[in-house]
Structures are given as structure tokens and as C-alpha cells.
Length: 219
Image (cartoon, rainbow, N blue to C red):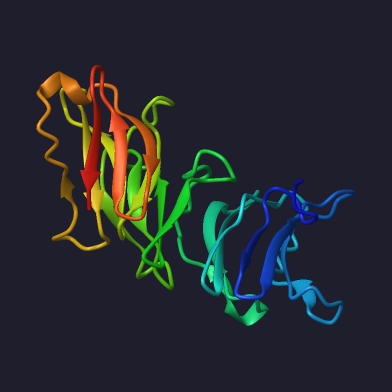
């Protein structure tokens, strides 16, 4: 059965985060609850009748979610379950950097990674910081194509497919640092990664397929 708070809800350390999508001229707001009446309240005050809130993703004691409004477009927010601890961690100033309000957000080693474009360059892999100033880009040229637009976490790292100037798809890995962000050496020949499809990820291994192989990558 689904969550009573809806499919977009997320839980973290005794709190459930959930969006309340507006109606009748009232826009969406993000809420948090400890499952008591006194502990249930809105953590955003968007006050925009066109506001929308996407799927929430939580880890430890915080949740991330994309807010979309008519004025600022889409931005990524973080919340610790209190209005004072809820804020935007991006400042793209671009209408649809995430493509949809649900976005693509994953956690690895308690870090939040997401896919977005700044409206000037193509889709990138980003590491969420505590503010727009500390949120940074890790990998450029991430693929929008539905067959390769994905982000998977395993072993404290994330894996994503990118495309070079010749259109060849390559598998990249990042642990959130510059030194730990690089192409995965799979041992495949050049065409092998032309169609990378993720299969599954365990605590330490990411499995994917190429045109004719199924390959594990140990992290």
C-alpha cells in the first residue's frame, strides 16, 4: 500500500516530509510531521498560487526536493524539518533546470547528488551544498536521452552516463571530490558503452549492461 502522505513523501529520523499540492488559488507548500498534531506544520512559505513541489528524497535528518514557481522556475531546496532550516541550495534562475519538478536526486554517503542544467551549458551532475554558493558541478555533458539519463549510487559514489564530442557514451563515477570524479575503466572497447543501461546497485557494486555484456563495477 502507498504512503498516507502520498507517493512523493519521504521520511528521516522520526519525521515525514510531504508536499501539499495547492488548489483554489493556493500553491503548494512542503510540510513535515512527527505524526502528532502539534508536530505537523509547513516548512516552506512560498505564497505562490502556481507553486509546485516535486518528489521528496530524504537521508538522515534532512530532505531535498525541487520547488517550481512562476517567478524563479525550479530550484532545489533542503529542509531539516523546521521552517528556519528550509532553504534553496541552488540559484539557477532558469525555468526548468531539472526538466520536471520531481528531478533526479540520489544520496550516497549522506551526500545529495542531482542532475540539472544551468540554462547555459548542458545537463550536469551536481553535489548539493548548504547554500547556492557551496553547491557545485562535478560532471558535464550528462545525457538527456531517456535510455541513458540516470543516476545510480553504490559504495559511497554515484555513477552517471556522459557523452563526448563524438557522441560516444561513457560511464563516469564520482565520490563528490575532484580527484574522485573520473571515467570508469570497464575494459570494454569503444562501442561497448554506446548504450549503457543500469541494472542494479548493491552497497559496493554497480551493475550495468552494454550492447553485448553485463559488467560489474566494484567501488
